[in-house]
Length: 441
Ligand SMILES: [Zn+2]
Image (cartoon, rainbow, N blue to C red):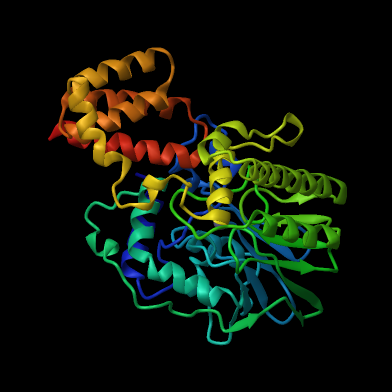
């Protein structure tokens, strides 16, 4: 396990009083993390670890690279920090950026309340520093805090952290948020510092507290997680309130209207040049619009959610990659975001799960191993997910059946090998570890 992961978990345990616990953290995507081969969910935590000096964007803007970049704007009246990365990365970022300028920190601007953006606030904040966020962050931070216990476990699974030995971290805390921002705004906020102009614009998308920082003198837009190099996580597997596809569209339009010449996402590399930025943003917006509209069309035609998850694919000209968010998860996120959980089948109104009858069906079929034999056939036919469904049923009937557990391990490993998606890989790794533990018992 990389050192940074241990540090991160350490911070999450110790820093329970601070908003940058692991609640809601690490929700972004950095394409460089995947370059060396198949997605490894812990690789993103190594992002930028070989950086020796801060990246100079222009005369006043500097960037420290990480899973969650940190930006610094140097002004004659103190510096402005935009996003602060994860707790484990913030010390390195601070060292790189203060090597450029160690002037007082006038402001910290948080593009949103996820932990990979707020993790270094405590490190950077000085007595006079104002911490600026969009006003929805009050509610958003309270939400993350309310589900701290659950988010810690789900982030650990999704991103490959080891929670062993840190049981304090998984205690459910329901004490409300510790408010860090001391400057809040609704739609827009402006200030000038040492001749540098800052305009903050509400651009909700991945979260409803998201903002864009606009520096008109340089036509530079710091967009947080509104744009990264993959289809966005309109739903994230670790759990989220609905994320509204049409918010992404509106917010991208707000950024496009600024006609930026420098685009600075909080994950990945800057994009330079008005034409390149415009082309990227328009394609990103079109991909989201397409998935949204196809989902709505399918819903109105009475299609069920699984059918649409399988059918809706990005056309080639809108294929912006699915290394972080999968389109099918977003389809389901949009579907259930709009309509909730009821699928129109009378049986779904009641409190018996589909799994509650698996035992009967498996017994009728001749037991877990008979079902595993059918799963094997599905595997041979490359129907890995159907095979996994059958094995889940077999294990519902006989949870410790070694044949079924071994096959579960094989299927999950095959899926893992085929996956180039960060989040999918994380959950498959989680399942693999879980099954290995059961087999060892
Ligand atoms: Zn992020």
